[in-house]
Image (cartoon, rainbow, N blue to C red):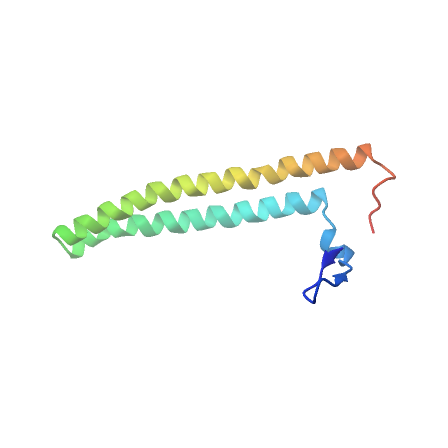
Length: 111
């Protein structure tokens, strides 16, 4: 149950909102890891494309921009690695959920 938006009224939560399965967690992990890998690739390609500015422009602004983008690339790579580590935790959560569900067989009812 959860509190509704109207003066403390309590509404029943739709059971579908609470349904979590190991399969769903594993599916979402793979889906999000794939999307994250694609985003990282695009991010790196974008930062690398700044190097091409030297072929068209020259001077301090281009050097400053290139330096900034290289720093952002390193920060971005670290951020993407951290995100991937968090996504990998979904597999651990799925394993624990599955283990607890098996230990409590008959106690947890799936609809």
